[in-house]
Image (cartoon, rainbow, N blue to C red):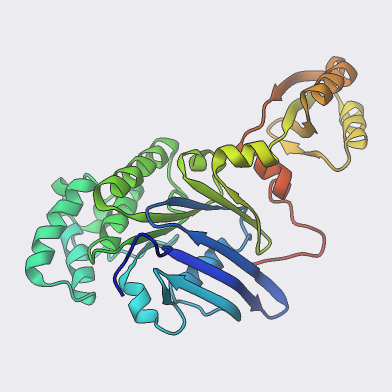
Length: 316
């Protein structure tokens, strides 16, 4: 089936997945438009990786349907995989082969003709800034370089959808930032659709749309700005003077307080409520800051920072 812009790159319809009594995905529905940079954002255990495994045809769903550019992943898994390039959480490169040999081996598996492989491999290595390392063993690369090589490998067979499952886990902040720069370049230069899962809130500001998931359910899906408008809240970060002050704040905001770095994070909701908080508790705090709505407050409002609901468990 040819890929056309009016066909969604991904369509997930009423998809449910269970592991025994545990519901990993619960009637999930969304679409990823062709050409989008789309993020699945959620805490560990939200169901992101389970969903990726279904899209990549590693697992099947118990109910519902998933499609890649109109191809049913359950009925036609090989056709669906022709459109896919995937970078999983766990490294999957062969450290005994060189950088170029890893790409060549992948191309052979996907039936890419030899002449096209010889043309495409140098282009991809230039794109991810690994051209000078083409003849080095993969075992000699840093973690960040290996991740870039995995992205290049995912594109050897001319995939139209790049799926990355937690691609920046284990990377330092500078390498994480560069990784997103590469993804933006790939979109521009190869007309790619990119689907990324992450639990790093700061990474998804650049995405076209964000789907927030938790406990196997879609909680919200929209652009970053609309999510802030519809679900964001004013929060207060406070470091109480002592245990009595902390207890008082927790009792005053029993459903809206969570642990934060060095203190508490309190979802006050509005500027007026923030002023009342400062008047009531300002003299009992070592430090206190008021923050406007952000994706972090959206995430906090919808998921409680990933704190499990009582009696609820979910695999990745």
